[in-house]
Length: 389
Ligand SMILES: *Cc1c(COP(=O)(O)O)cnc(C)c1O
Image (cartoon, rainbow, N blue to C red; front, side, top):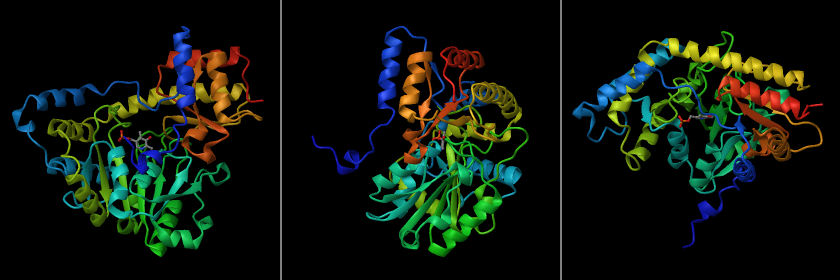
């Protein structure tokens, strides 16, 4: 059976080579230490698990949920936005529940992108932006995220004829994979750009609660005018160690939220209501679990960054996210460097090229592995004689 063009057009899976090498190393009996995956290793806080258990036992949660989410869930999201960012949201029209934010991000282009339309996609980036555009028949115009620009896209460098054709501008701060953060001034520029060219801003805010040293990331929706042009995607996945649960939301401009809701009514049937109650518990219960997480991540970040610096890496501590983004040593590409680390140290990192062409020359290390494994990984890199310079 022939697959559709959209499947054939999928970019090659760039981690295939490294995945094969990992499987081979494991088969040889190598104790592989993976810094590759951005998936919290710490468990979901107990009070959230308890709420799911309690609500799962209540038959009133067993039937089809409403596609847009329980009104109490959307109210909890709106209240959280108010408390956390000072942003006022109408829970009935400006919030929609999602089966994890990835689901909503992937479906958004179906609302606004016709075949041949252009979307502005950062590079390097979470692959779902460009894939969603591709599935809707659109084309991605890649905006390089360069270190000299603080890994922010240079909106002024986008040719006017491209901007005029563009439908969606994707942003993600705090950023995966670079760990970069954005300030109000940058978001303000994005709002002005979007208004000039009549473009929707899709901000992926998955990491706003994973920030270090007292830094508080902002919401795109805090910026004046953002509600006219923007939609922000968020989820419980990273904040509350709930990646497996699949609970998220989108919030922002009512027309965009409603368009996404219309696509979703025709595709899925919402989130298990017991899960939504657990989500409310996450947002409204004790937030001490976030501080505890951040203590662990801060310790790991410091160990990792200081360990790499000792080996010559010219890097700073990231202000947010669970990632350290670092340059590969001169004369190597990111794929070869990842292979070298695996062969010589049994350590897995993700090569930057996997996040787009502008990710070449870098690799990403995640903080979501037990601290003693992180230390062991660093030790092995040092013992293998691998240095930046
Ligand atoms: C982890 C992550 C998400 C969250 O995905 P969920 O589907 O909500 O689990 C979204 N965007 C980025 C950039 C991520 O790294």
